[in-house]
Amino acid sequence: MTVINFLEAERFFGSENPQSLVEAFGSPLYVYNERILRTCCSAMQSITSYPNFKVNYSVKANANPALLRIIREEGLLADAMSPGEIDVLERAGYQPEEIFFIPNNVSDDELLFALDRGITISLDSLDQLERLGRLAPGANVALRVNPGIGAGHHEKVITAGKKTKFGINADQLNEARSILANHHLTVIGLNQHIGSLFMEPEPFINAARVFFELALSFPDLRFVDLGGGFGIPYQKQSGESRLDLLALNQMLTPLIESFVKDYGQPVQIKTEPGRYIVAECGVLLGTVQANKNNGETAYVGTDLGFNVLARPMLYDSWHDIVPYRRGEPLKTGDLTPQTIVGNICETGDVLAKNRALPQLQHDDILAVLDAGAYGFVMSSNYNNRLRPAEVLIRQDGSASLIRRRETFDDLVRGCLDV
Ligand code: LLP
Image 1: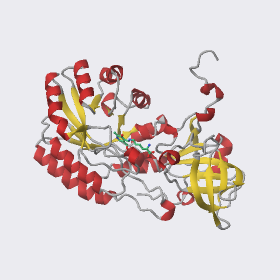
Image 2 (image 1 turned 120 degrees about the horizontal axis):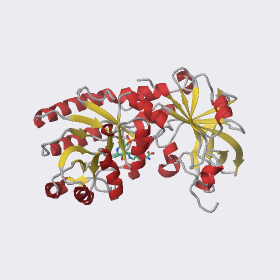
Image 3 (image 1 turned 60 degrees about the vertical axis):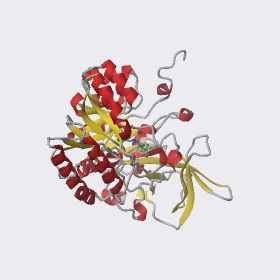
């Protein structure tokens, strides 16, 4: 697939450039590229040659309806974690049968929200299974199983193994079976998710092997969902390689085929990627506002606080940064270490520490790469800052506003006594 190494080579900004976009739509600004989004959708659909395979897009990574419509056009189903995610999927045209609800610790009302729509629900604890059984005896359900093998870029995003709240452990499955029998529930699907961001196929394959073994003991399965977590290279500028989807396919396809043969009935295989689909089609633009050197650190002050992109603050995540001056990539001069900070009242408001970049100055624009996943969705109004606008670069190179920048009215929306 296309490797998104250099923004300028890829014509990421279409007929615009960072300067013209910021002038037209303001800063900071999330910019998405439709062509790259479509490329990532089709790449994910190639991870197995098993024909009865579907990709569920995990809407938590980016919930902009304009992107969801494109993802649906590319043939992806979706999974949702909350009623709000179900709602936005419906607004973007998703039908109930195209949505899989994988909640965690939800209320009766939230379960009923999905049940009323006929959306398949996965339960991830015995307690929630019991609750669903009482609300909807006789229903078809899915179970989220913890395969005992986790993976991820940070301990906070590893979602299988012992140190996580997620999933029903293999040794709890007998108890699950008696709850199922008591309420006449039928397990039509099993799902797992080992965690977010692995760059080698092995953890995914090993967990799938364990999972398929467990699946053999459920006789009525229509689907088995292997989870998401497929990583993207955040350090492209240092030559980080991509997750090898071909190698993944070569390991995964025989594993699926042997499971389906042992299972003896047709069964759909699914995955649920979020990051892989949307991370690389998104760039966050921001503006340099001030320089300061305290003798130890050269600070570059920007409007890119952790209210706009939370990942570096939360997980020490790395995002490559490309600086622009007057619309052109800034390549001149020696590289010097600069610490890029935002405008939020916390010392931890750091986007990048001691990053080697050409000397930045007022009004330079920074393009923060691979910001399409867990970017806007995790942005906030902290310090009463407005959440940014979002713009889509269409395949013809034109730019459309797909979410307007917030206004001060948005900051008090819902408040009484204003
Ligand atoms: N399925 C389930 C049940 C999940 O919990 C997640 C992500 C996914 C699928 C999609 O995982 P992905 O393919 O995107 O790795 N905010 C963090 C990532 C949190 C992931 C949460 N769960 C980050 O910015 O790295």
